Image 1 (cartoon, rainbow, N blue to C red):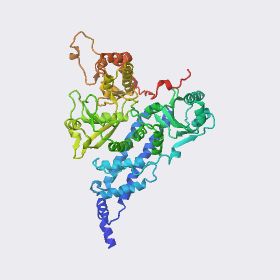
Image 2 (cartoon, one colour; image 1 turned 135 degrees about the vertical axis):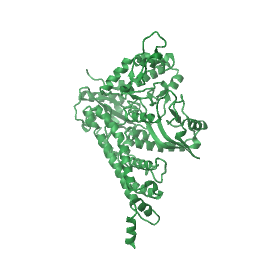
Image 3 (spheres, rainbow, N blue to C red; image 1 turned 60 degrees about the horizontal axis):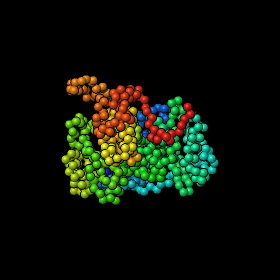
Image 4 (tube, one colour; image 1 turned 120 degrees about the vertical axis):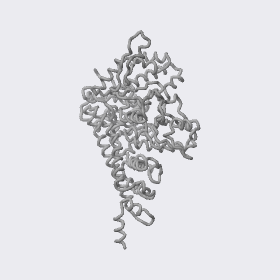
Length: 595
């Protein structure tokens, strides 16, 4: 009888075997095999991710800045490639959508067991979620079959010794720095190592007095070196009995290809900008990301875990942690979602929860006549920004499919607006509002509102000056912002201007910057032959900002923005492949170099 049953199972398809085996009373190893298969897919993905990340030091030492830019894009694409591979393998073996929930529950149970000692368990959970999401087209958010909630609570500190180096503090400050640089070695010479040590010594003595220095009992530095752009960062903290001082040692390459210490950052505000949402992801190699993020969160307690995971390049897991944080906030708040303040966009409908620091953006069904673009074009522009060095001036976004909101928390005004403008993206259920395609972005004050409300002329001037600098730095990064109306920029609490409207961005070489015709004929522009890619910078002053006194400020600080010659010079720089260096901390804290 036993032999006959075995022969029958062999004659069935793999999917049929699983369905049969998952019936009550049957035992199967197939969920266990699938759990192992998915984890193997994640492990392969992380190895590829780590391989690119580990090459950051060599690229930095050899000043291979273009290779660094390429590596950023390659690393982002790895996740999607690995996910596609594993889902394809699954479909080649089974018909996953035909399987009962009991099968997926068993698979999750086996997967959870496999993660018990896994050093990247939290990232592996997100990868598993992505597999389930791809199979069910993000139509099922169910903690019984996926990790909507984490499998366990991680206790920071249990792997601290694996991610942190500790240094002797019994000697002098200089001796401590020498020990640090003896541990973090590079295959290039320092431009002036004695000067670097002296600068670091003096900078720390300005920050801590003698009593504080004498009380230092521990200095800890993350083993991971954080690479981005043309800089490398050592991140650590100085521990005293009554306080802890976080610090960052910023390293850069000189024009001669030698190494120099550029600054010592000890203010949390300066460190926060380095880990900001408008910058590209770090290359920082680690096998224990949860412990690294826990350490960083201790240094920057105002940063949320999802922000830190994202800054390290784990943007997919950043999405997972954000969603969990969002659910927690919903449980602890009572306010309603409503339209975001500011001028309504021509491409996106934007709403927010007043008590939460994020805005939600939905692509409209129809665009204004002035927008000669498509829905797919808009998505492509957001992907471009994800792959680009955002130089601290373009907000990062999280993209979601079938994002569910509690319907009871939506104001009727917002719900009506979404149904009128974005109906194809909205699914209404009795208790839910599901947005089929959604972007989440850090909340900022729209610059036009800020300039209307701010009466201090010095603050207005600072904002206008930073607006021009923002446009220039984006252009230096080889991106033409396109629609530069000041309503498309936000300003952070620290006064930094950030661009967040991407539907008209493009590479610099995709535009033709032209002079306006000189003529006494008032109808000259009507007869001018204008190609779709033509841009007339002399017209920028008429629409970047509206009020005359603000226009005058912008022309005072950044008059070159209104000349075609300036933009053509930036095009030439981009065409040569020259990568700019954007230092993410104030100029005044940089160490002076001897000439």
